[in-house]
Length: 79
Image 1: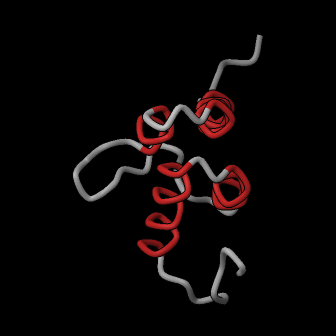
Image 2 (image 1 turned 90 degrees about the horizontal axis):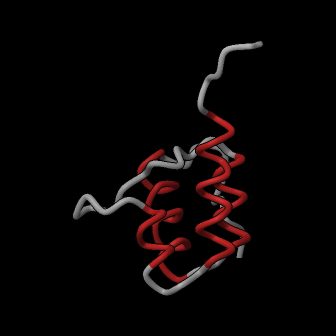
C-alpha cells in the first residue's frame, strides 16, 4: 500500500496516517509523511502529540525521526 492515495488527499487524512504510523512505530510512513509536509507537532484527536505516541510503544527510530525533524525546522540565527 502506498502512503498516499493520490494528489488530492486531504491534510487531515495525512495527519491521521502520520499519527497512526507514529503510534505503532512504523518508521517509513513517518519519514515519508514528514518529508511530504505533515507537521511534526501533529496531535491525535485527544490532543496527544505524535512524538509522545511514538515514545509509548518505545519506538526510538520514530521518536528520533520526529524530534530531529522538529529540531531541523526551528529557525536559527545565522552566526
